[in-house]
Length: 227
Figure 1 (cartoon, helix red, strand yellow):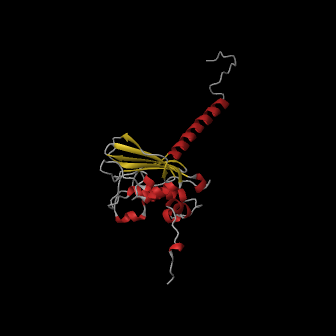
Figure 2: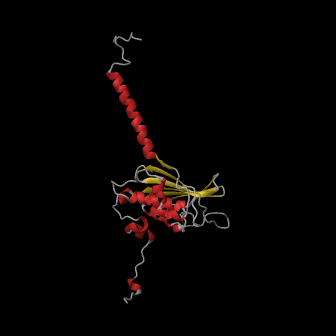
């Protein structure tokens, strides 16, 4: 049996471990075009599955190719004053939820909101490190977390993007077969909405150009007396 000494043991920081070995957390290596989608999938899986094995209510919003938001109804552990217990690096990222923490490591900016009994807490992070203390605000929500991730484009690569036309079933995970639950939850892809709006604008402009080319709406007299 090979023996190891204390000098041979290397301790790697969490952030360094995620960035050098993303496949351990997201199933694909750096450079894979599927990495942004896998990061989203793991964040969704974490939000959907409560620690007691039940499924919660979540929603997903995709703002751009590398930006997305996940909202869930999981209740955060609190201290005696009802404030969230500090998580990773003293942040609002709960220590029991590694997936959003790992996703934050691959992000240039992460915004976390935690809701507890009508009080909200908001904090911004660079990587998984807080850029400052969390802010407190009033909210009608009783419990839950909303996290927005801005994935690092220099890490993901210029040709990588979250997949289009995602279905809830694709983000749910095969592990959910053991815990029956509805797999439908809203996925709002703002990229598709922006593209549809651009298509409509383009269609209207083309229709206007066609009408002008056909002389529709033009003054046939040329002296302004028509109409």
